[in-house]
Image (cartoon, rainbow, N blue to C red; front, side, top):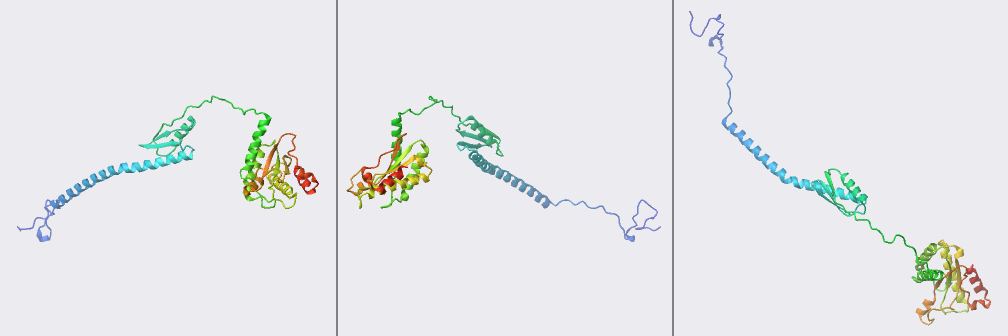
Length: 305
């Protein structure tokens, strides 16, 4: 019987043929345990992660109000801009915890309701507190007013004073020796035309005046007449009806100041406007005009038409 490392190959309970056949018993895989230093490293990582998480929570908590405040500021600007666009600039807006608070004063209850609708229409608005104040309606003690019933003469006097005041404020001026109106007189002409358009029932006589300086007798009458006609032409160009304007040249026959000083002469060189009532033809031509001078008569006659 052979003894040693050999076994009967028929023995199925043990297939180990021993080292002679180059085979040994099967070894179970060894269970490796984690090293102690690796376990210690994992604990360290877990602790570090917890610390980082704590700091993140603290950071988020500290930065939350700032971000919310900035967003609410944006909402505040948006609502304020919407109020201005809606024609409600008097509405004061505040935003607290995404709630829009409307304060201030509006004229009617309809505007108060409209302001609330404008606020609700904006994104991110949770609610609206409408604290707008609507004043109570004011009841007038006098329901209707009527213009005073002035006598005809007094009403004409009022119109005459207004007409004279317009002509006196920035008086109409001409270039020396002629009938060319200066540019500084254009605003006065515009005001006179607007006044006549506002009072379509009145007629006006345009009267020209000069100072006493005269080289040839009758020149001042001619000059005053053509200057009055020049003013009439300018008013016609501004839409005044021709039959409402008549002209007259008085020369130096009706001074309002001395003809010695420069200031007095400047005051005498003027254009006046006389209100004509129904049926009136205006002032007559001066006596000097009846001396048979055809030029003076033609100038006055043409203007009166």
